[in-house]
Image (tube, rainbow, N blue to C red; front, side, top):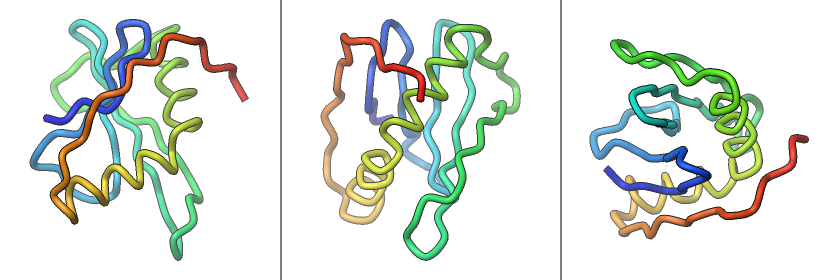
Length: 103
């Protein structure tokens, strides 16, 4: 379960047995949501935030932070997905300690 980012207690990660479309999970305490990154001909065309079956979804500030972080790092997330799932490279988590502005 490679952790990609930590952002003020919010953890962004892949599960080791993931499936397409490219997506990440955002966890905060006992809540979890996922963000699917939709590509068309190698270009990010959409980011969809969704709930995870059996989990209480992120809410309020944590859901907004998750959405902001995924949109800000979407291209990096796609690269990390390819590195991890295609090239089987290990990933090092990044701790983000500065607030990411909403776009």
